[in-house]
Image (cartoon, rainbow, N blue to C red; front, side):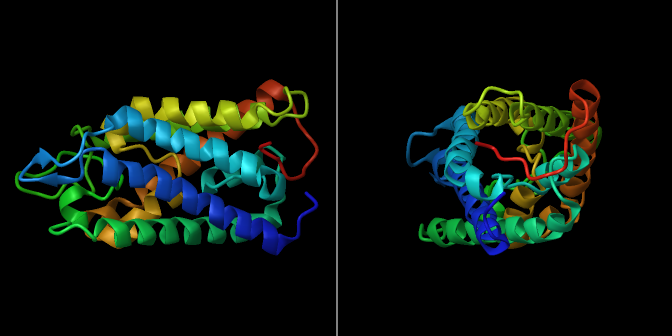
Amino acid sequence: MSSSMPKRLAAEFIGTLVLVFGGTGTAVLAAGAMTKDAVPVLPSVGWVGVALAFGLTVVVGAYAMGHVSGAHFNPAITLGLWLGKRFPAKDIVPYWVAQIAGAIAGSALLYAIASGRDGFSAKATGFATNGYGVMPAGGDPGGFSPAGYSLAAAIIIEILLTAVFLVVVCGTTHKLAPIGFAPLAIGLALTLIHLISIPVTNTSVNPARSTGPALLVGGDNLEQLWFFWLAPIAGAVIGALVHRFVSGDEKAGTAEIS
């Protein structure tokens, strides 16, 4: 990776900001959150639209920033690439800081826009936060599973899908993989992941993506945030080990998603 560390961190900050703003922004502004008296003000793109939004932001972000920072935009990906001997250990914490800062900035920008509508409440809409468990009667949707799935279900799906995501990222950026197609494959994988798991946890597989909205909403979202760090990290470890077993060891370096 020829770019200097400040440039790489700026790329991770911008890319994560766009990912969180684009994905959660679609959920908050265009997927039924803009309602009045429980009646949609605008046509909803639904969960399919949200899944596509997350996938598309990764595609465009990877093509735009992959040559600078590797386009991780996700602490779990950064850790997994290190375990897969594709990223230096000394750069993990700086990347994490940049990614979390980008996620918070993206969520703050979204909040500023969403709050421009009379009656908007981040707690009442859930603000695209991740969660598990059944929402109590009369409670706010934030911090709970959209379809009421249990913690056990959330553990399985977040670990499994993060592991799959790592295998896709590591495999498509392998030195023997076809050149230039990694962003498309990774974006499509993230779209599929969201199509599967939005009803269960609102889909994390990315601790930074979970942290940004949770910090702004607070409450149950912060109480459950530990899980959306632990499960994706565990999935990343599994995915990296699976990739190493299947593909063999590689020389340590910085993987580029481009």
